[in-house]
Image (cartoon, rainbow, N blue to C red; front, side, top):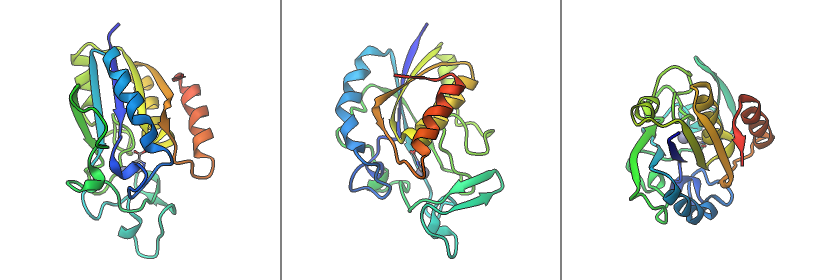
Length: 198
Ligand code: VGL
Ligand code: ZN
């Protein structure tokens, strides 16, 4: 059994003051740093969108943030412009210890497809490369923490269990966006997929 800590999207854009601020997003940073010591492998993900990304409401005439539209790959929530490549909003929270990170997986880079999961884009088939990295390292068990519980953590955790990893989400070190009950739905969905919520 080899463990990895997957730290999802602990970026300024998802913390108070950011463009897609998650309530309390900054409260988890110190606890995440403290957890790193228990893992031989630490991997960070970073939401990393080109300007004009198709997940931004501003890219769709007449649409507002949090509207839902149909994309070729299914329903897509439209977001405020956030985490644009190279901007301060996309930077990691300045308190996050990035020194232990073996790799940083960037996602959401395809202008036409959003990517909540650290493993696949929202078409559920275009890989990010994280699965291959983990398998090459011999990793079997994942602990996931970060932002946001109901979107990127949720999709990453469900994909990871479907790929055969043993997955625990440490919910004390996550915070949710919670759109229309999405937090409760994500907890049910993760549990029924076989994710352990700790
Ligand atoms: C996320 C919405 C849009 C997340 C990323 O990190 O949960 N949510 N992009
Ligand atoms: Zn995003």
